[in-house]
Image 1: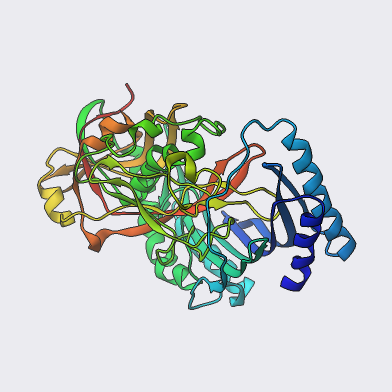
Image 2 (image 1 turned 90 degrees about the vertical axis):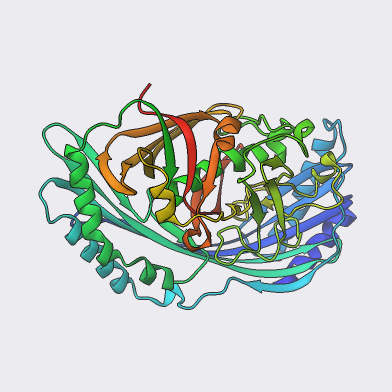
Length: 480
């Protein structure tokens, strides 16, 4: 594959590019859903294509194609240069790339069981068996179970001498019920909402999730929500479950610290950011208990890789350290805007046909010291909020509201009354400053996001957020 890509770099150079890179990507995916007693989704897809990115007179040009003939590949490289030349006529500030040593390497996501080696019959049997358990009560009008598998093999070369091959793999799935009676409709999910848990792993993750063992509890909790009281309005201490806290991190820390949003270069999908560069190094984003680390090297993360789509090696760095804003997600183009000598390696594209943009890396809240039982015992009257149901956040990532599937009132150190239609609201820095307790490493896990949208045209990306349950004081809860 590399031998087919090197000539494109030479073509770009001859036609006037000062820099060029080529990404050739082969993807395989499998997406399965069983809804009630029928298959509602069975997608098996495979793609192969390449994207050529160039700098001409300080401006980007990009073109992509899925035709693999030498003639088509040469045309694509020439078109990228032509687009770069056109872009340069309107470019006010020439692009300057932060330095990166060339890399020659092969990197692969570790796994135990290749998910593509598991037969389609076995996968569907698991989903049908799960739905059968979910649907044992007639009040469960919809029971569904999902599996999502994706593999991406990449070949990357650039005009600076890098030559990188990577194989990325992710596996995931989950289940959900919709319970209905004459008065209400409620949903309950496992292991989390929005199609379940996903990791950079093989099919061993599906075995670990134990669909059949957890289906009865999911069904029963969905039914219990039908007769549960509505979550009361007011001010309460809240404990966010790990899966809900993962989305809180994603929306109120991950997106606000993508440097292109911060600089006003990106405003699609809920705007820019309040976390402007004048705040770097001194702004109190959260309490001293809050340390959030970006990490593209953490095992099983969905954004874990050897290198990003700039060819920059994976790294670990602080975004918020003991409550203070310390960093951003950057690429080679923008690192100099905050006087960093090197990119943080957060440039990624959705497939071969999109140009790379800054994306949230794996971003995790570091564990605290609390045992969960001790935290519950110390939180009488608090609400334990689990599993996201809805979310909304303003154009600067400040004011937010999240809905959750369940809210358990902590009574005597244990889960007591179950409430439905739970929600909580807040303002990002005030909310994170109210965090006074984080559970320890025993309760910490990575939770995957597979549907992060950004850009125009829109691109999808995947990343993970490592969390353990945490307490936030005096949050606004209920519909206000």
